[in-house]
Image (cartoon, rainbow, N blue to C red; front, side, top):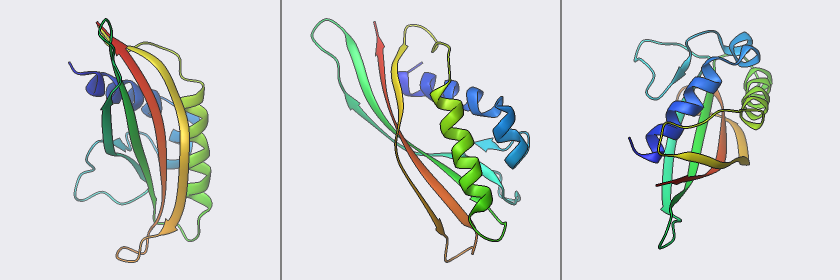
Length: 135
């Protein structure tokens, strides 16, 4: 398993099990690729960039991860509250990645809320930065 897949699994499991996020968007609504027939609210693990960060003796990668919340509710309230729940859940996340990877850092980098013109849904895009190390 690559570090990116191990990290994605960790993020998915952390957010899917978070009671505060589940209270806002519902259970089973964290996706890598949402089903075609599902209506918001839900969270999508979105675009992901990986950069080599290793040395001659240790493997390492820096990850830039976008998490995108979608809401059909009027206004930004639901996506803003859900974004806060995501930030809190990942800031408090404890655990480990599948071997041989370890999570050296996971932190919030930036966020943006807006109304999608095509769907008229509100979305909050959150970017996180992570560093993984491995054998």
